[in-house]
Amino acid sequence: MTTLLSYVDFSQQSLWLSVASIAFNPIFWNTVAQNEYHNKTITHILGGRRYLGCYLLAVTIFSLGIFRDYLYHDALTHQPKYDVIAPELAKPLAIALFAVGQTLVVTSTWALGVTGTYLGDYFGILMDHKVEGFPFNILRDPMYNGSTMCFLAHALWSRAPAGLFISLFVHIVYSVALMFEGPFTDMIYSKRPSEAKKEL
Image (cartoon, rainbow, N blue to C red):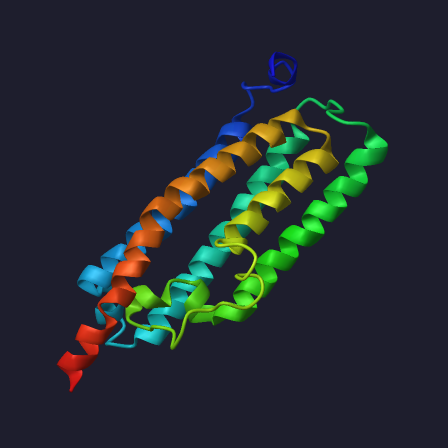
């Protein structure tokens, strides 16, 4: 651990910008989504068009994700290089991790759809039933798991120990986010029967 830390240049601003963006994104989407659930701010601004609100939030979250990935790539280009494992193993492992990670992310999005992926339930757009097919039949949170794997893959490919620590930070941030997202989403769906009765 000490050896790896010696190959992390903490003086690089790009490192801290990357870390900040990783922390900011889930804080942003959870704050906006929970506000939407309680106050319907976006829906009211858009004249009651909740689907449009969800799609606009989806574009915003996706764009923030692209920017976060750019900052991560930029951070690793300015970090010292060190072969944590043999290069002949690191490259194939990075490719495998990225392929599996992207598969989990893409198939999760496909299974959930746009509104299911991008917090449509906070807008009152609920799914008819729980998604239990692949990849949700092998992992509880495949999108977050897949994203973390892609960060780790990039770190190995770039030979940057800083990327390993950032990947660990990604895992921690997502784990904390799930502590809020999981129970809140369960609460939304638990109220579904009572909300349906009110509409009758």
